[in-house]
Image (cartoon, rainbow, N blue to C red; front, side):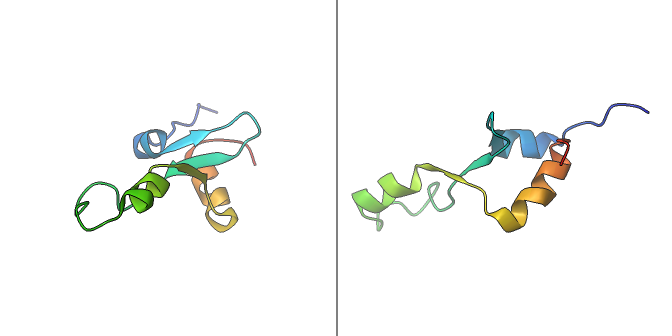
Amino acid sequence: MSKLKTSSSIKKRFKLTRNQKLLRRQASKSHLLQKKSQSRKKKLSRVIQVYSGDMQRIKQKYCVRL
């Protein structure tokens, strides 16, 4: 059987940790930043873990064994 290719969009948006957890960036940090407070923008720039409900579907696109 041939190797599975990881989706290019998934590679760009998510990072897989050593413990098979997926990390993602938060939305709302690219435009309309004037009306957002400094603390809100700082919190939005953090990297967070993907929700467990989405984890299996994204890992499947990432070509990771489940």
